[in-house]
Length: 171
Image 1: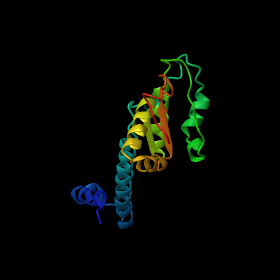
Image 2: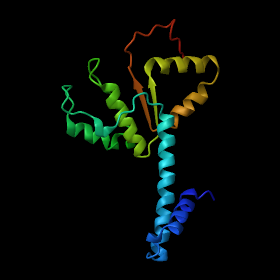
Image 3: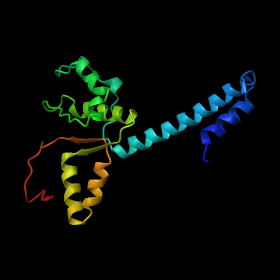
Image 4: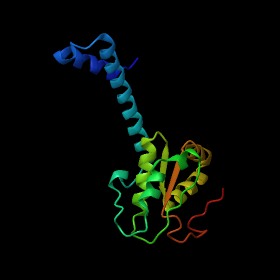
């Protein structure tokens, strides 16, 4: 049944005299909590890995004192991820160097912690992957991969000019 967290918890309880004074129900509750936490951590680690974030941003590390016009209340409202649940879009705009990538990554990481599946692309990589999937006839697979995600982050949107010759992609 692959109850590794429960097994480790049981070994810990048997080895430590601290658990002897607890009732059966309390000890069982601790074992179930440990198994649940282990599984949740595994799921989170998988979601974070499949996200492919380039920037390991944490919501807690966002600096609201930096001069970039970021309102703390508005950003923390976005961090609640209700816009993701409602399937709304979010566009972060601003001059180069104000931290749009960092903020997008922090929101994406928070969405992962909330249980959402996220996928990150730089725009140039996104176009390249679309083009390659069309050439290799694997576009339906890529489209399905994207469709399974709750949030798609496309960074550096149209930062560089797009030319039909270089980024040929007909969908």
